[in-house]
Image 1: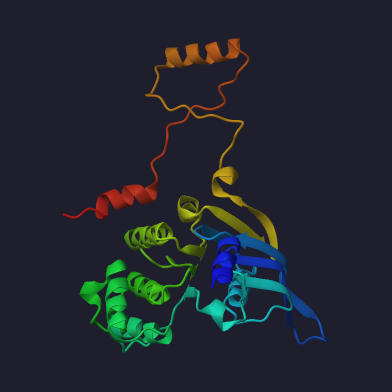
Image 2 (image 1 turned 30 degrees about the vertical axis):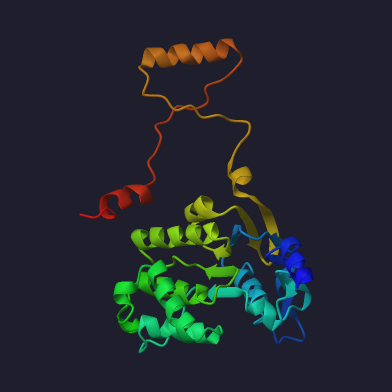
Length: 290
């Protein structure tokens, strides 16, 4: 047991080494390479963004992490265990982009079903189901049928089923797709709360503003290849520029400032009014309780 605990401390949450996935096209043995020698390392406790256009290999990569597809070559490990092993799968919770649930079940029945699949039973099962439903804010709707849920509610109950068995790694594929800004903000807060609990989150999203706000690191894929990887702060920041925010200056004072900078060998490159973020304006208007 001590050896296993030590392995957990030194192993990343997720590690891909030289991962390749080829699909047969059916044309004279020609192969389509969906993932091309992908190397990634996600440390425990991070929120990690996996980005790329449609067809970039994100979904194929996720399926290999989940053990749903076997790689053509390379290795994929979850907390140091091969992703094809049952032990690795027990550590993972998954929310697909367009989850299909049994719509005749209630939210509580759905989460209970997945909790049982995860090995929970008895009193612990009932308590855990109630806990995660409360975590995603659906206690009041827990005994309604899934078919009555909005898109945002479906995503939140999907998140509940993904976390009910206490996974250490969560894979969220477009968790806010089709969700209104209020629902998206609630899901974002849930992701950050999961990080605060020590969970590792791998997220895909086309909403780059959301990714910038919540991710520690990102990887950008294109045609199956890793194009860029790094810490969000380092990628979006610029060390060779500074922005100074001051109240609006009269034209004469602005000209004086420009001249002062030029006298010291600097150039005032741009004067612009700061913009408020549209998502924040929207939430300020409709997100407050009346």
